[in-house]
Length: 327
Ligand code: PMV
Image: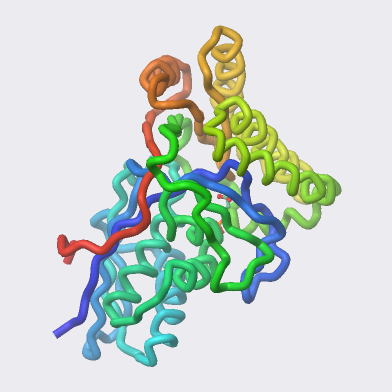
């Protein structure tokens, strides 16, 4: 009989982003980061271990996973197996709540859900911090998805305190309106981007500015101050993309529609709509606003040329186990 467990974990959007590594193994980020866990963008994953499975298998959104995804999942399962002292192979079935080709990064919610489900299936009693320390080895941003609400991943803290909740999801009705402009794979993976960051002559300037930006972000969250948060989140996203653009070789994640949305957000703000943008390592734009304005922002985004889909996410809770198994 296989032993199995199913977990649901939210993706997250970083206001201050992790870009660049001080060390790859163990994974130490160059800087601390702060995010909000998302409610409407999540991954559900069932992991079943059995001694008679010949090898690991992975089904992603109802289709067999490609070689790269399989390799990463297996490598991650090895970390959990090592802790449990087992060599049993696993059958993994995983599904995202967001469209498969939406261009939304699923690695944060995916590796958070895989960590929680695999640990539970093997009977490991791990704290969220221990699971975050495991998850970050495969996807740095996944570490923050082990907690709900507003979360800081501290670059300098020991493993048992690497992530901490700054405020629960009920603290503030902040909303992330995600404007999807491209469903194509990005030109350079975030893994490649982290490595190339060190070739940018601007990296030192970014790192030097981060302590103040982190402090402003913590403060803005505590005060529920959208203007304060939005200002620092926009600056941080542009700083990350400045590093990407000045890496050797350069990485250009933006599409024409990306820029259309950035200008639109500034225009809407001048017109009185409280909206601020942030952009991950890709062409999609996340627009931060509060619940009262979310529908107005979503409507305006849908009307922009080049936007193929819009997702509205509030702040979500920590991963949870469920009995509704996918397999
Ligand atoms: O989660 P990773 O290791 O693929 O890194 C991605 C980091 C960004 O999403 C670009 C920023 C962040 O902190 O979420």
